[in-house]
Image 1 (tube, rainbow, N blue to C red):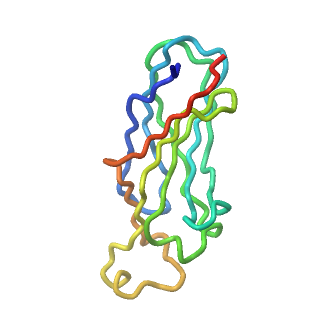
Image 2 (cartoon, rainbow, N blue to C red):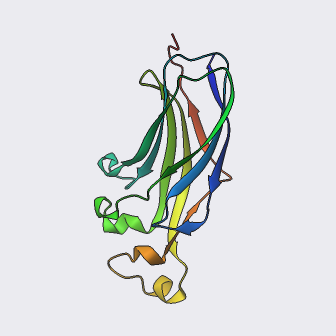
Length: 154
């Protein structure tokens, strides 16, 4: 049985512009004291066709973790658009929040992200090079995809 359960993940400041940071409020429960750190990561999928464009936006170590309920806000800068194929900046992608213990990932929570223009002129005539300041990022908060993995907690 997992010693850590994610109880809630709230997406703050959503929707927002593409260039604003990602902000997640994470609430989790620890069934017993964990002497080592939990590693949380926010990963932006830059292209569905090639994972080499994925970017770890930030990672944070939390621990040692005492038994009980815990909450923190995890904030990460927006992705580096120069590392994303220009044809993949606008449209649908994914952001992942993962957690590992002793380098073993035990939970992965994924959300669809839609990056689109809100200006009618840009919608009708999108520029060849995306105008990041004019893009709105909307995370589909109502439909997370949660994957859990069994790990060795000892």
